[in-house]
Length: 363
Image (tube, rainbow, N blue to C red; front, side, top):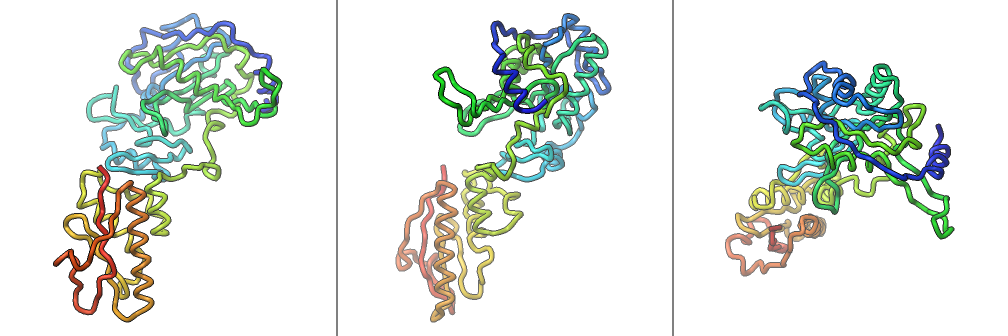
């Protein structure tokens, strides 16, 4: 089915009644569990046209993916690239293309000492469950595998679709008329994400409800499995926020492909924060010409070899790097007086103080 056929289907689709139904009575999901059997035993009234919504954790547990390991080590295993890091918080791009905090690795609702990563191919998991439900019950359903994620610029979390089979995941309505006849330009409802969020309202986090049924979207069920949740993942080439703001600045200053894999400590750790900023500012600068030093408090002293134009240029670049990196962290900068900074600003033999920058670290 093409995107145009999907759009035509939705133009004819009108929701008269939508039901979101919890599924109770699901036991603890063990490795090797048949999720379709668990669902149909607890809720035998699964109908053609229903959307079966299941948590990624249930899928991962059934696949035996829960491991006894340190969470950070499991996050590393599933990380393709660190997008942003601030203190202990890491937002990463997974090998599946998803971008999530801690790679979606979760330590809740699992045995103490174990963590559960996301399934390696959630779309494949959705397809497999769809086929199994059809085999056991003879009904044509769609399947959405969900996980919880935060959102940029918004507090709180909501569920989104990480795996989809048999449901139109994304509607490209560009070029179709709105109610007033004007042509839509960029409207593209993320149907699968909306289904995931609706299902979370009845599943909850502590209710032992890994499944929910969404009923009333039969016109959006596809005969084939469709493109899956992969259609909802923005390509990196079109991602306006491919790195966090701080990490993007550090990446530009360092010109180092590995810079996004090292984040600053929490803002409260001022000494470590200051040392990291100085290290980044000095990266790639000829230290025989100019160098930058951090005081134990909040001063950055920039020094240069005297009587050298090249050294003064290098020192000037260091000063600007310090200011740009500080701004990326929302830290303030104030020019200090070399003469008034006492021992902190006293230049070693053969060097001169170009400037002293006082930093106001982020709170």
